[in-house]
Amino acid sequence: SLRLPMGNSLLTLPIRELTRHLVRHIDGKNTIKNILKVVRSDESLRTYKLTNKVVQEELQLLYRILNQHNVCLLRNKKTPAYKTHDELQQSNGLSFSQPQ
Image (tube, helix red, strand yellow):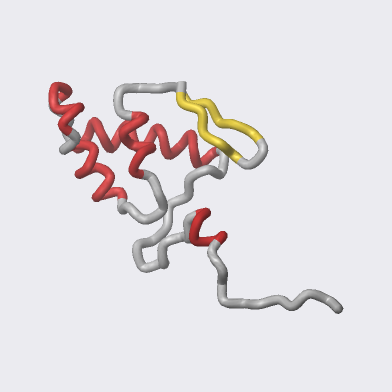
């Protein structure tokens, strides 16, 4: 199984052949088209002779599970990419002074 942090809890996913490979590329920046392309071209998966249909079905199953738990949301490509955790933690240019 694959355990993903989810706030103060963990989401445990059943592992299928492509789960780890798909999760590795779901980052809020990669498009579905790019995820499918990267997974299909992964050398370690070459023996499976993956078709787009097989990878799409696996991604749909994974997305349904993640979306039910509000872990993964889809966005229109015209919508700017969501900020990553690291980007949110970076300074936003505001400065605060200490009370005297």
